[in-house]
Image 1 (cartoon, rainbow, N blue to C red):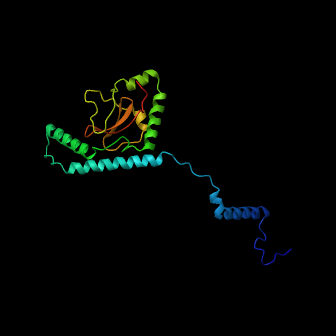
Image 2: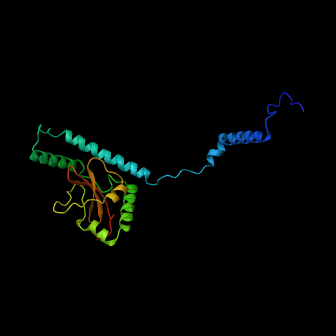
Image 3: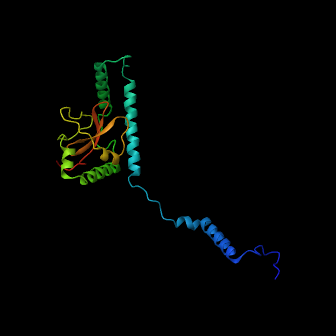
Length: 204
């Protein structure tokens, strides 16, 4: 039988025709506005927004510190240790005055606080009793205060590296430290506590 002029698939094998129909049908489905609405929503980290806000607040703190530092007398070309210590003390005092009304949570928003607590507790739960004792043995007792120094007479225990990997990273010499049952953030350049997560640690 001779094909009509309108039959453009004449001579095309039947199985090829079926494939072409399926491809065309799939293209129509993808183009349909209802297909996108039926897709499963992507998984969203519930803490992502809080952690992004945490980072933004830390950057604002560092900008404040830089602004205060620019107001100090410039250092000499070759500053002595005494001059460096005096400058650090002056900058720390300026920061205390600028943040004299600071409260816990000013830098660490609620969502980030809960995330940090979970990370610390999961880490400690995964340790043996001797390992936990080794982590907590040098932690000073007491309650932290924003703008106060980390207890100068106490050892400054290093936060375990594996725990640090799970915590939100801190920029520019801000450091996590244990203090009582709390996880504090210390400005290592000024030697002052800038915020803390209360009761992140079990009693010890």
